[in-house]
Length: 286
Image (cartoon, rainbow, N blue to C red; front, side):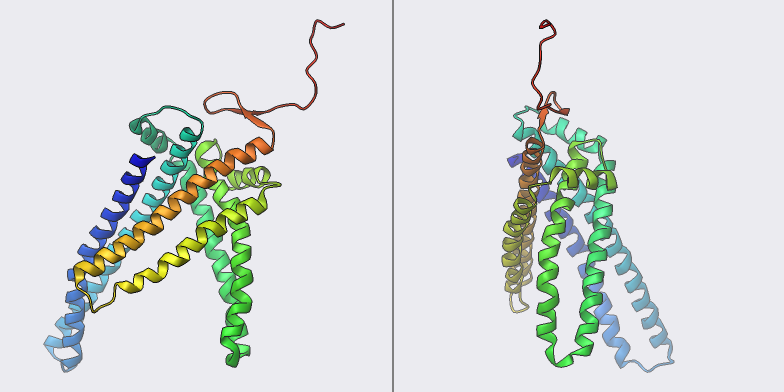
């Protein structure tokens, strides 16, 4: 787990640094061209050149950020699947090399990818419904914006913690079982019966440290040097990624506890069965 943690944090850090250093000169050039554009007389050839340069900078910036978003999405799925599978084999006491572990993740990448896609859609839909409920309330009561936000966001966050129990468990199911998408969500809903409150507690336990870490980004203010600001942001991001890894590990253990609660016992390296509660009667007894 220490090796996997180091690997995942290194991948995320390199990805962040690559994105930062690739867009930094582009942003500098974009800001410079935009500043000269405001000082240039419209209709001149210099103005047209600056407009073209700004447009090209925006296109390159959008392309780089799109590549970064897609790469981050794929990397997040890979890291989540790796953490879950590593936690699973560690929990069951199976001795496995990192190479074999990564090969298993690569072979089964489609299942967590599909499940992660469904979870992303659900999260976006939930956020849309939350804002769609908040905005009309703010427009109706413009003098009570803070109160309206509290009334909407607190129940929304609590209900999100409730829904995320099945969502997080579905991702674990998609890695450890031959299920994905809606099937994984259905399987998670069955497993978590009777353990919902424990799952909500886990979400709260890992949600609070994340909220505590986020204000730490304010330490990277513009008064400090670029190196210090970049170091602070990188440390804060690593803390968030580390919290997320521990969350995946906890939900992996939670997955096995749910299986035990449902009466399912391990009969092989990757197979489970439900044990009958009826007494076993010998065939020799008449």
